[in-house]
Structures are given as structure tokens and as C-alpha cells.
Image 1: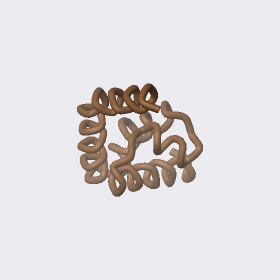
Image 2: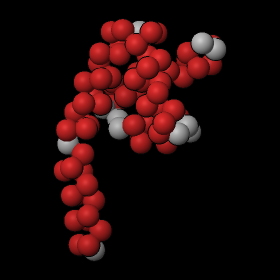
Image 3: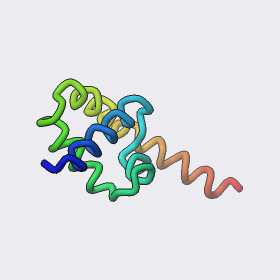
Image 4: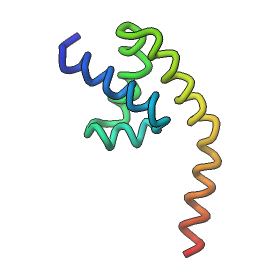
Length: 81
């Protein structure tokens, strides 16, 4: 793995773990695609840092569990105003 990819994987993972950010939010912050973030934190991170991988997976699972609520909030805000 290239050094810049290795560093990006760690940076993105630390950001997600510390801020509980979604894949979409992390992609926007780091200027990469959602696909890149997802590949970084689900495939590459496990080989790089197993402990951080476990933390990030918990955040991703939580975000997945509540995504239907976020979607409802976005729709409510859209039609409210």
C-alpha cells in the first residue's frame, strides 16, 4: 500500500471514530468519493490497524441502524419550510 493511501486510511478512520461521522460526511471532508471511504474503512483499515477497525465498524453499524431516521428528518425539514 502506498504511503499516502496508508495515511489517508488512518486519517479517515480516526476522524470517523472521534466524530461519529457518516461515510458521506467523511468523504466530503477528505475530498474523496464515498466508495473510497468505504473501501478504506472496510477493507484496508483491517490490515492497517485492527483496533481502530473495530471502533470504526461500531460507528458504521450505528449509522446504518439509524439511517432510516435521518432520512425521515431530511424529508420532514424539506417539506416543513
